[in-house]
Structure formats: structure tokens, C-alpha cells
Length: 367
Image (tube, rainbow, N blue to C red; front, top):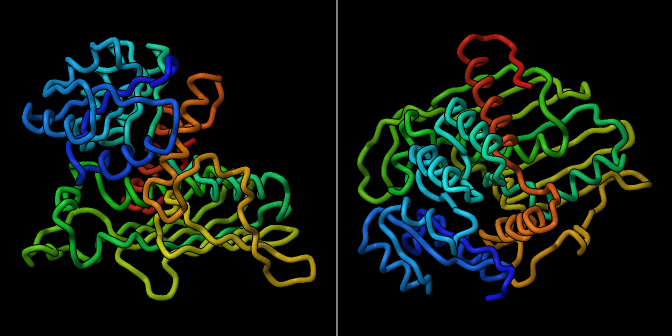
């Protein structure tokens, strides 16, 4: 513990199987400058067990008690989306900085409420769109910005979610119901399209088609059939702010041929990005670009983009660890690396525009 460590209070760190346990805790082990000082879960027993397992000094079953503690500088909200609004409001009202997992709210209206609250309170409020911290995505963004491909003329983006197909894991069952706000559209696609737009800019206008091709799926543990009301096929076309033409297809399940393929065509050359997973935010990407004599050449990510030691791109928490490193810089040095609630609101508005376009058959804009 150092005097300038940022004290964290976790809501949702309940065990090794939780997202906080699987990703946040390992990330914080390799990023200096933070200390987990408190946690809260829904039951006193589970809070005590988690505190013992992770060596956290303070445990609560009421998050209202956690946000009052002076030891806590920043509250991490890592619970199911329907609870985000209540917990974020609680933390902001207590004057605490907040990091909330993505999606920020259960729909655009909730996200807007939280963005307004954060602005009114003038408190740093970050959202878990961690693709902005990925060394690979930051490098792609810089390659485009530096003119490596010239003016971007068009782009094609195809990816498979790896889930949401014919079967469902028990932990994802609650996400099959649209009303819970956790779906392929909001989560996997939301992360992927956020990285896409951060590198190339927002859509000026778009047309979208959403479909549910697996209306009934089977649980992987029991084989029970469960109804699914969320979309598992997402297709959109449109023009970006710079006039480039974009085509995006995000699909459920897996692909043996091309789990992830992204081509950026420019006036001076191309970039081709591939991966074994459609989860762009995890950042384990292969980047190639047009070579001087033609064809494609490998573009290794420079070491300067890697900010954290003790993990590799194959680690689930790799990008999140980089997000924590950049968030500390934002808090301590006033930089602007990690997406805020205002950034999250833009992405929620985009998702709403996609849903509206699919429902009405009309082109939509959101910025």
C-alpha cells in the first residue's frame, strides 16, 4: 500500500466465478497504484467469504454502507445491468468516483440519467468500454490517424460472438430476455462497434437489420430448452463521418472460417485485422498492412503501447489491466484515455438507432 493508492470499493466481487473475480482482481494484481479496500455483495455471508478470499479488509451486504467509507475513493460497479442505475446514483451522491461496467444502463434513458448525474456532480465517472485501452486497438487508431492508409474509403467488419447461438451457458441465461439489457447487441457487439468507431469515427447515418435466428436454445448444463427474445444477427451498413462506406455483420455462435475479420481500405493502402475471437475488446489481434512493394506485411504492435507487465494478450484481463493503468493516469494526471459516462451515452444512442432502423426500415443517425 502506498500513500497515493486509489482505494477501490467493489460492488459485485462475490467470488472467483464473477466477472470481478475473473478479470478485475487479476488485472489489479499487475497494475500498481490501487488497493481494494471494501466490497459489497447481496448477502452478509457471501461478502465475508469474498473478503477473506481476496484479502479485502471491509465487507458489507449493503452497498450504501460501502459508499460512505472514507477509505473508498472509487466505486466499481460490477453487477447485473438492471442494478447499475441505483448503485451508480448511490456512489455519485456520496461524492465517489465511479467505474461502471458496460452496458452503462438498461437502455439509453438510464444511461442518459447517469451521464447527467455525473456531469452535475462533477465527479470522474468511467465506463467499462475497455477496448480503448487495448494496445492493438490504440495502434490501429494511430495507424489510421497517421495516414498509413491515406483517406479511409471503405471498411468491412465481420465477427462471431462465440455465444448466443444454439446453446447457452447457465450464467448467460438471464441475458436471453431482452428486458434485462444484456444481450449480444448491447454487450459483445457494443464492445466491438465501440472499438470500431473509436478507430474510424462515428456513423453519419446507418441502416440496420436485426434478427433472432435461434428463438429457442438449449442450456449446456441440463439440455433444457429456453426461449430467447434477443437478436442474434446484427447487420448494418452506412457512411461514417468522413464519408467512408461501412459494412458490419456481427453474428452469434462460432465460425470455423473467419471468427473475426476487419478490413480498412484507404486511398494509399489497406489494413487487415484478424483474430480467433470476435470479442474485439480483448485485443489479441493480428494486424497487417499494405507493403511498399504490394501485398500485406505484418505490423507488430510496438512495445510502447504495452503499459502493463505480467500479462499477455491471451489473458482475459489483459485489456482491463491496461484500462486500470490509463484510468489512474486520468485521475492523477488529468489525461483523457478511459471512456466516460458521456462516451457510453453515445454508444447507447447508437444501439437505440440500430434498433429503430431495423424496426422501421429507415436510415438513422445518432450524433
